[in-house]
Image 1 (tube, rainbow, N blue to C red):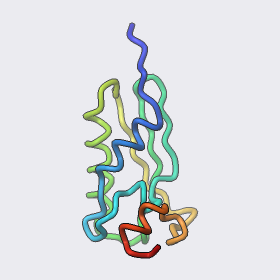
Image 2: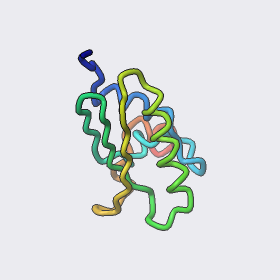
Image 3: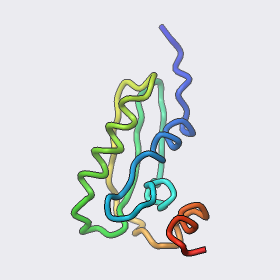
Image 4: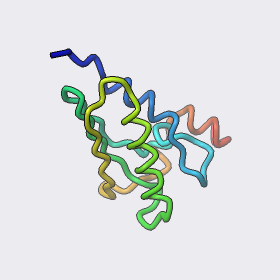
Length: 103
């Protein structure tokens, strides 16, 4: 049996490659990732969208799932969309605000 060295930080780093196609900022810096749990190769991600009716939601969740699945040590990925608490622009990171010109 191998011991997985996969961490929450590794998953968050990978999620920096996932973008909302309508906003040129990754899902981490947009503040869309609410939680990441890593347990022996199983990764559970809780995320939201900028608004509940966003038509790109399934696409973004699929991109996140695919990006995590290609990581070494990942056995299973579950990406759950939640809308409580609702997303607000206050959740955008400082890096995200710079990318959007909001700083």
